[in-house]
Image 1: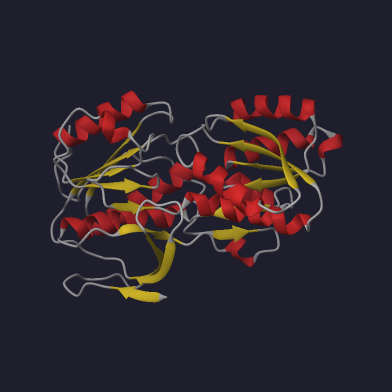
Image 2: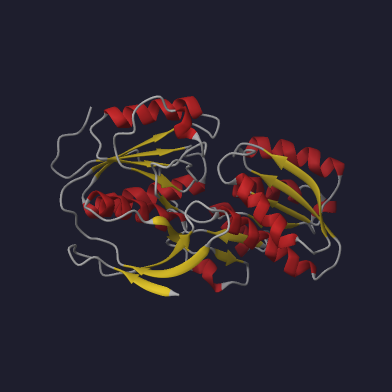
Length: 346
């Protein structure tokens, strides 16, 4: 199915975005409707937005930041971004949420470190709140901008299932923080895709998105055995590229990334990475700003909405069409966008 989303009361940008609307909301298994979405190019007033994210330590959230900043500048709205430092920074993110509730902001985009974060929030939810990227379990939140992380895992697992051609293979998993972010659903999606294949999980390891931590995990993994595939977060795969290059016995291990980064993209170009899921994080950031402005100006909740997931391989021509997938190489995290002509906030 397909539809075109447009509201005549607004002015629109010339381009359109190809998106997916998923239902039921916040569910692991969802039906998908394709949307042609026309973004705004102006707003009714200079809204002030607060965005909370787990961290800006990897290309994923830096790409989200780039998208947020780009669209905020395009629409002339103010944006302030806070990072919790890691997926283990729940206390810090709760403090930041309180600051956003008390501050001069019209709405909050919450990239949560924990799906149940709001159950631990002691204050009153007094402003519109939308979930950014990560699932947020609360009856007060009815819009999430992102993709289905179960499907992110499924795409990666399906690539492995197809390339093994029903032959036995060992797969080592090096996913993100256990039971935080999208790791749980990614893992479940991988397992669903591999059901009925002859692929066995030879190791299953978790770590925060830190290259040094993954290097340690890889050291212990490769000391124990050499799998046929390593499937992990982009940061884990970045670490694996270097680790495998140093071990002659591990040259034939196929690397599969659950999401895209500049290093995994280089790995695809050089045939060092076999596959990467790509959920177009820059477009997610742009969409989040556009959607929150629409809701502030009277639109109904959007439910689960986001880009479609791409599957990238070294042979895939889409590898060269990634302006919606990665921030520019010279982009550094930006934490504040001011409305032109407005007095900066303290």
